[in-house]
Length: 479
Ligand SMILES: Cc1ncc(COP(=O)(O)O)c(C=O)c1O
Image 1: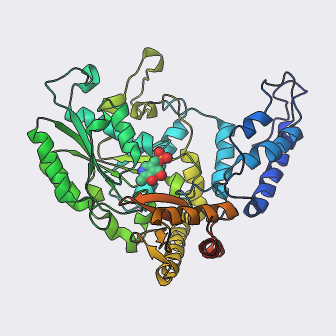
Image 2: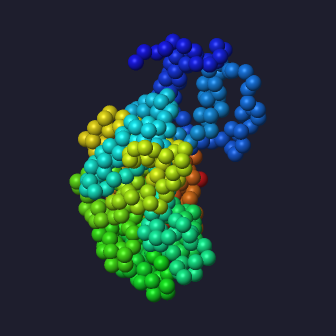
Image 3: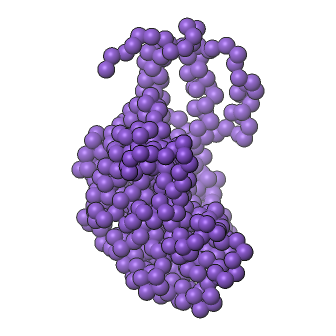
């Protein structure tokens, strides 16, 4: 394809070709010095806003000036998710193919709302969902769509589940229908809050989210779920969906999906599996047993933007029967009507407009190959196990939850005069204040727990070693 050589806008606007070169150089410089920047932004609230003029410029500005403002105004206000020491939340990697694909996506700027508004975007999306499904070893009866986030995916799944449980809900809603009984949803005590949000947004009400008890491995107790479902049915309520989590946010525990699937089948309830973080690990044969039974789910979410080197946002929602997603949300005003029977992506979500997200999955799969992705997942799990072994061997620390994937939950045993919560809080603050490592915390059994999670394509053994050294220094000098 050849460049047209024509200016797109008025001649005093920055030139695209030279600006693109400057931008590439800027990105390379940013990436090469990233490890020297503090991973956690040090700006104070309001600093960035104060540095930005309150009104937009009236005349075009020089692109070099825009880039220099990126350095002075924006970069200091970033917490660097691409930093190799970013081990706080589940990572999202700006991998090389991911960055390049986002550049193309912006240039193409297609809106894949209907098949005809970009057949390639719609059909590449179907194919990429299939590639993801096959990569994680799910059967081909699952089909799916790409959503922006797992929160949206779970919401769309809940709306479909609600439609199955209450067939006329689409027309009549839930409000004021005392004959129905309250509609309820179920997740473990460690289920992600996106389940609660979905229940709020779908009109079920937060009070109707049941947080089922967990066992000593932080996995949902199937017997407790069974009892909760029976109690709700007995009280005239209407169970709509159970969400089992494979890889909980707090400690990456895995609910026993096979047992939960039995319970759901016995009660006739939709089973949704939230594998937003851990899903890609199902591609590793040695970890497959943790996913036992997930092929029996009605819907599954996993996020390539977490642990598959795809930049945010990219969440794959799989379902056994996409018609149920369509039946709950499809709506076609005349101006969007099609002559063809092709699959229109607007039918399986809330948004009409859709980004061309499949392109970055395509680039990532082809750049690394499935073997490359598996190697990365294995390396991350191995690094986590090495870190956990150091924690376990240190009498000042203890492991707080089984290490199933690439996340280590641990805490320090407080010296006399400190509470456990206070001591660990100080330790975490001291690590994060240093600037080279960013860790986060969670609460397990009401106890403050430090969390280190590895998932970025940029994180190597040396960075995990430096995290360990940082923890050791913090133990000497807590904040
Ligand atoms: C298990 C789990 N589910 C859902 C989510 C929500 O993900 P998203 O930010 O894509 O909505 C997260 C976020 O970390 C998560 O850990």
